[in-house]
Length: 179
Image (cartoon, rainbow, N blue to C red; front, side, top):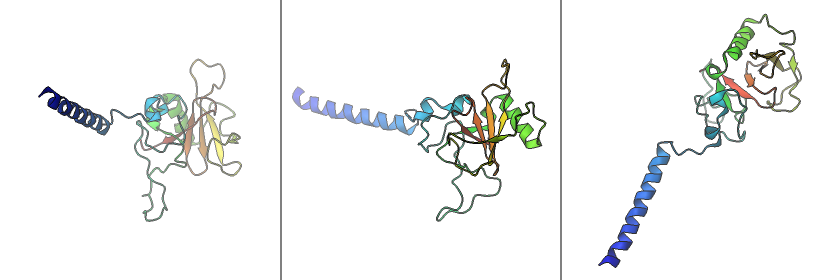
């Protein structure tokens, strides 16, 4: 009689283990997404993780799909559309206060604290989407305690897109102004 119960116990334990695993994954607590593990958007000071992933970042709402795709309606006016889905994004409100100050100055057209603010950003390393020369412009984000311009920058594109770099252009996050 014991020999008959052992296989049933094993099957029951396996079924419970599978159900527990599925439940764990469905609650999204078992996410092993690389951006969730080391999300740059959460700290807003680090660069993007694996850039090839298109899953939404935990700190940002889902990006609106690009307008003009087959069978899709154009995005409503004023809706944020990422310029490149391969770039991670960050909510504007998750950026350091100094970055938000710089974005405010950009919106007003200045005045800027540094003479080099507003110069053309050449995108030599092609970390941003490829555009014509003169398309991007860079702005300094004040770094407390730094004796110079520091490493933090906001780069803007002529179509209104904005990017955050905490590490002097080594990495970029696209700024989502909706949040």
